[in-house]
Image (tube, rainbow, N blue to C red; front, side, top):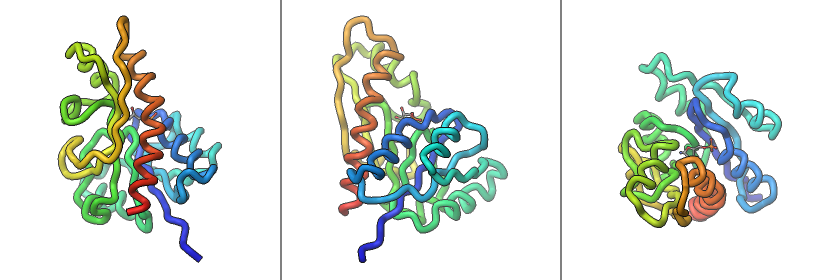
Length: 193
Ligand code: GRF
């Protein structure tokens, strides 16, 4: 019998867990042919911890300190995963993790790349920059992760209109709906390859 592939989700300290839950729902209803075997978070007590436990997900805390062992500890927590999905993780991944999962790490970015990505471009800042640029479209991008910010090959991109009167928050909500669809599509693609 074919082994069910396993996903590792890595979240940041401010993650709401909405992408994690969208991925979990897609694993449950069969759109994604895999299971989430671990969710790695940098500390306990995050708001998303409740959602993770209600969904029966295995949440493992991997603190950022001591920095010198962080890479090894994170790689160990993710050991055995076939694909890693970053969701709300705003750091560069340590070399130990990049080396352990070549071309097997995805990130979701709440803007169109490459223009609205790079160091410091996360959260509402992305949407504020989009509005300041006066463009008529925004969107989200799921890309492969490498040693630079928001730099790897984009696997799936979804676009939304920027509407008159949009605030960073209203635009962010419109983008987030698409993020959940884009992430599921990108995981399906990545698991097929
Ligand atoms: C998303 O907007 C994603 O694009 C970015 O971080 C946010 C995480 O949101 N990388 P959530 O925790 O999945 O709700």
